[in-house]
Image (cartoon, rainbow, N blue to C red; front, side):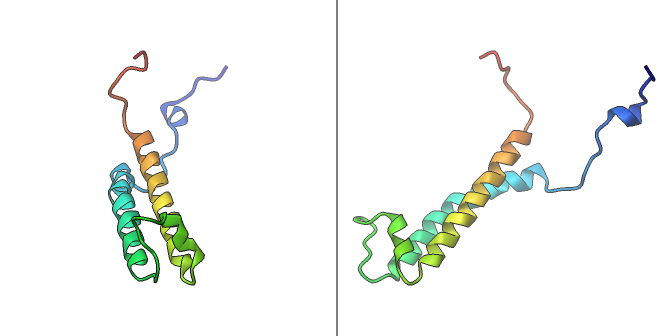
Amino acid sequence: MAPTTDAQARPLSTPGISTSALLTCGIFSGPLFAGGSVLHGAFCDGFDITRHGVSMLLLGRYGWIQFALFEVAGLLALATAVGARRMPRFFSSSC
């Protein structure tokens, strides 16, 4: 068996998005979804946020706005999960 050098044992580092940037996505995910939904509901005739679910905003003429809010908030939440996965573990897994 041939000995491995240090350069062979290390994985290649690829440039990408930093962990802190991914975690920052979580700060914007919730307020974007909540604020956008309330704002969208305010301009829809007959929509009452206390009676109707936010998903009902998908059914109107401007339902694409709510669909885009769902998609963007979901992608931001996924980015946050990736950032959280990159974080070092502070607790042992034996808990």
